[in-house]
Length: 134
Image 1 (cartoon, one colour):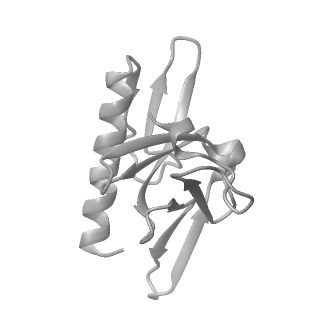
Image 2 (cartoon, one colour):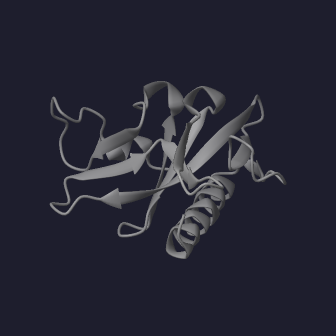
């Protein structure tokens, strides 16, 4: 992971946590960097685990995409991926070009990457971004 990616990830984590707090949730952050989640939020009934991702707006401004896996280089320099969809309740996604956060249930995300449609839904991308705004 490059320094630029680290900065984007940190920015996304801060923005998602701030959005959850603004919605009135209690937010907690893990001490361990190896946790499957980046933050927890308490809705008064349950504590939910959130994996935070930095999303990108497509060049045609029709979709938002984000990786549902984490990619890291191991000691030998090989890239490893960690897909933890079953270990979290939500994906919190921050899109800097829109300065907007989205909260997507892990039950609907794709295995490696997911897209949200900015315009009207279509067969390729049925999930509308506006339905998941945090």
